[in-house]
Image (cartoon, rainbow, N blue to C red):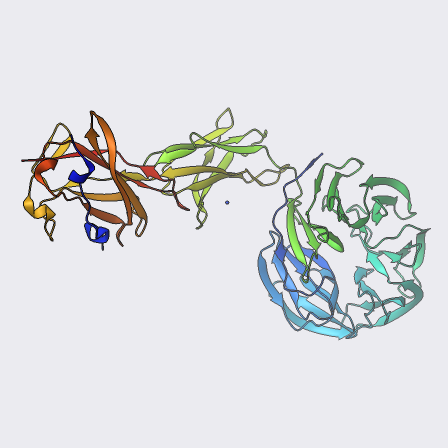
Length: 547
């Protein structure tokens, strides 16, 4: 019979165990990018360079330049008061409110190439029609005369004598001599002018109660879209007769038309409602909506634009001290998912990740990415074409708990799509090989009895080297020692200790008398889960002291 006293650990436990040195439906909401501006004024897309220009408020002196995916592409400094913008070829004209100046920016180099005098002020809006730039000279952001200035070197300015309240402009390349002007005084009205003669523009159409805080003209010049009340209203040009509506149920704040004219986006002062709605042109039922969640995170007037490739929708909000830019998928997303063959694998073993694309498309290629749960870089695992069933599978051997997801780049009718992620946990392997002894018999490591085992040096004792794969330096390893008592295994000792700097732990078990001889014993080690791996308990390692 083996008693607990026959197997004893030293009272100086730390000496006996030694460390060995050595992450109609509502669409997903992409995260926004906070912009280094105090406020928002205007946004303009440059289709040649795939850039987006954004101006702030009087306190800002920089024009931000972003790529169409929302990433930073530079900035243009020294632009105090920058507001309305017009793009003409490779020149960006920028109205500088309070400075009576329009600056000229080279869109290729993003540098200022010139400036000229113009009494831009007030709402600081700017438009090009009839080969001239149009603006209001309001000095108090209220009433102002409608002016224009020529683009030749003379920069001749002409006052039309027409007066508008916080004048807002829209133009169309389909009718380059048309200028749509909104009078923002309630009830807001809209005029359509032919500015072939800049001195005395001809009135082509006018309508009261048709204005709004924003508006846009279809690429073919046939329709004006205006956010009004709880919808975006459409008016035929130039006569401004009613031509449909795009209702949302909440106060509309902004509107944008896709470059091809096939889609209409309407921003909303949502608060407790969705913040952006997208429609197919001519269809009053929205196809997609987005809700940014926070009550103050609503679409700003003028803060809505399609990218030049129509694949994305740019949205400006300001929920706090700084405006936020979001890039939304303007085309419908593809149907893409990802699955795993198992939730947990043992370290060194494989799992299968399968991307599943059900969208009918000629682009059959998907990509599978990974990122460690505990933090780290995103890595492309593999890419390839899906088979007839829409599946692309890849075998993976993660070294730590890992998230996987799939990406499809989209096609002419669908936006790039990212699947939800799936997680595969990795369970460590625990090892505890016996050290020393003279042979292994029936699976047990045998040790000759040694009186020196109970001495100060503990030599000749059963020894074990414990570690996990992968190695975990400084991680606690716990152990359990059992012996046969009355014909069954009973726990005799338990304990724990931190592994050394190389992730390994040496455990020495010593005894006090010859009574230990001939009694079969066993030991095993375990490690708890951490941020990177699932814990595990290793196999039993049998041992026995013989004479």
